[in-house]
Image 1 (cartoon, rainbow, N blue to C red):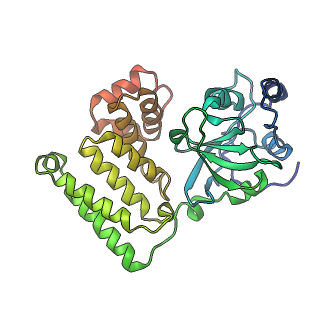
Image 2 (cartoon, one colour):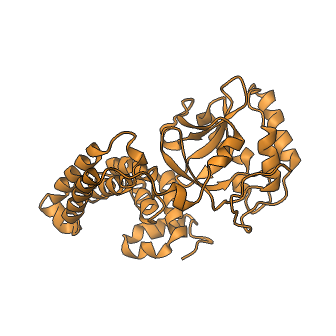
Image 3 (cartoon, helix red, strand yellow):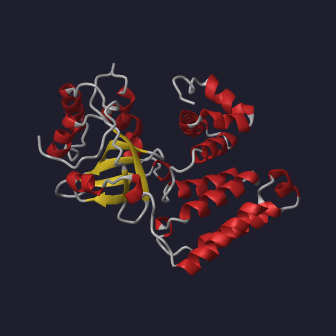
Length: 317
């Protein structure tokens, strides 16, 4: 096997035996149904045979446009009876194919529910791109370029210290943004008072002013997470749940997005409130698995939803 970068895998995270019939069956189906451009890169297959569906500790990277992402795990070609069969490439592609278009094949799931894909739209080897699930309606996938090849992508992956810190702004500008975030936070410290005296609106204004000061690309800066998470929190307090989701999803793509389990919790709550129970289940399950005790401090309906849908089964505390 070719020597690849050491990604420091969790040795207990690998899927079962690589099933060649899973690979060949999917490839044959793609060709039979008119998607001949999608072929599996031999380098990718060779790598997957050695590190089958694992969760690397060196899992942080950013796209060519500067958005930061975190790999949850690589997908696999395990048997349907494998404990990690939900992360099977075929199963994942089948669930998403109407929104992936004709040229994308997922190979890893990201922290925010997006996917890394091989993109076969060009004439040469497939390049690697991030596919954004929230911005990809049927037949209109939204992607960002990551690397020109699978091996070039592997070389980008690094530890949290290297990839999740982000870039620093000049001190004076960062101080201005930080002060605005502190002011916004002060306005919503007491949710009941914030709603009663309209200070939540002033909190939103503070965070919007802070966001306006971020140079493009806004999501590369270390402080971007504080700005957009704070904006989402203020909109959540104001019960502007759809707008809160927009802000929280920007926070997901900023450095330090994995620094708090409150982010998937808030997203789950917001999706619950707007009636999108599929997305609510996805994020509330993620929050419960990361830190179940968070649910002690929120409305009981969210924990009831987690339990009634079986999402709590096997989750940690």
